[in-house]
Image 1 (cartoon, rainbow, N blue to C red):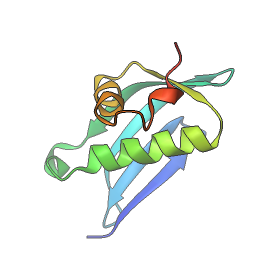
Image 2: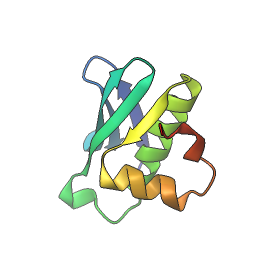
Image 3: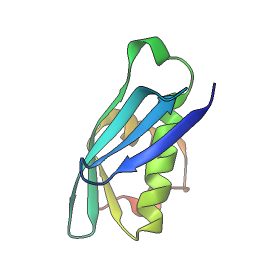
Image 4: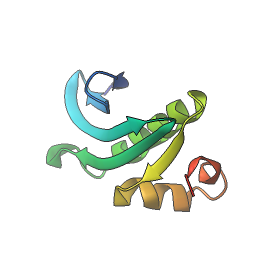
Length: 94
């Protein structure tokens, strides 16, 4: 079960695929140094495998690498950041 994560910059979303099949995505708005993550989805047949967590980790790592801040409007992204302790808290726009 190969899992791949890609960043579709034109669509403003990160996508996760399992065996080349779309399994979920995380959408964001971007403006002046900030990504607002507003919607994260795992398609029903792929739930329960930790894919949303892997996708969110990838998206936050990419956001950090780009030197951007985060507004976690999506509950999943917000809970993921909270659960990660200090790992991503520095990214959150106050």
